[in-house]
Amino acid sequence: MKAILFYNHGNADVLEYSDFPTPDPGPGQALVRLKAAAMNRLDLWVREGWPGLKLEYPHISGADGAGEVAALGDGVKTWSVGDRVVINSNLSCGACEYCLSGMDNRCVNWGLLGETQRGTYAEYIEVPARNLFPLPEGFDEHTAAAAALVYHTAWHSLISRGNLKPGETVLIIGASGGVNLASLQIAKLAGATVLVVGSRPDKLALAESLGADHLIDRSQEKNWFEAVYQLTEKRGADMVVDNVGTTFPDSFRAAGRGGRILTVGNTGNPRIEIDNRFIFAKHLSLIGSTMGTHSDFKKVMPLVFSGRLQPVLDRAYPLSEARAAQERLATGDQMGKITLAIN
Ligand SMILES: [Zn+2]
Image (cartoon, rainbow, N blue to C red; front, side, top):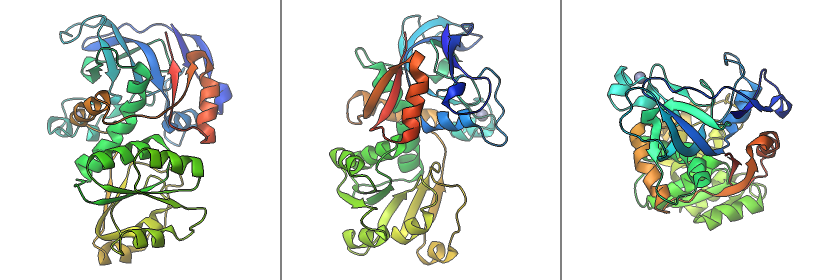
């Protein structure tokens, strides 16, 4: 099969469009012939590497993908060759105490496609059959692939962990990024009032088109947490979605009494100085999570298929042009998700 391989960390130049053996699905596994893969910022971090990351080379990036079942390993009865599917990229053992209690994204042997195993920048991928979810007739593979990781992650954070309720006020730090746009749509669907802080007019306009109630331009309002206070009648936000990290001190200021600060990552810097007084004096909760559970995936994907959650697609590149696609992702200029067209 054709795939995008790399043999060492580095910039996008390490990516090679090349041949790689098509996997042979083992027991409990399915082989998926991919039609589309979607890119995530994680792909750039995996390619660049971080201390402690050990990849089996050549590595193939990509967590998100959709296509059709091409072959089945022993013991798989729930799928047939030709079934159209979207992949849940979270790999879990199914047997540890966390998996058995439905918290499989806390699995002691947790892994992720494109990080701990070869991913979706390829014509075929082998995945556990239980990580497949049926794609409705006629539903576009690019849209499905673009939705999977980010809506799954945002749903787990806002709904399962954050317990978002109708009428609450949600502040989202950043008007772009797949998880932030997914969080915005999920918050609106949940009946929340949504404030978005951003620094680019085009990205703020995109947030507005997705239903953001209030936009705060960080380039104009340096102390944007004060704008949040004014817009919430000096209550502050009930929930703050902060996947930047370095903005935590201002997120603590922008949160109201009893506010929850949610985080699933950091696009800024992981190390932050925190003023403990905000946490106890305002009764704040800091809620971290990563990815989502099988149960979350089953809840959120039908909302995508029904159109109640609509991923924004930026541009599709042929698989062979994954390097150019990653270079675009790295600029941050994209409006929505970048996908790869395969097969
Ligand atoms: Zn487990």
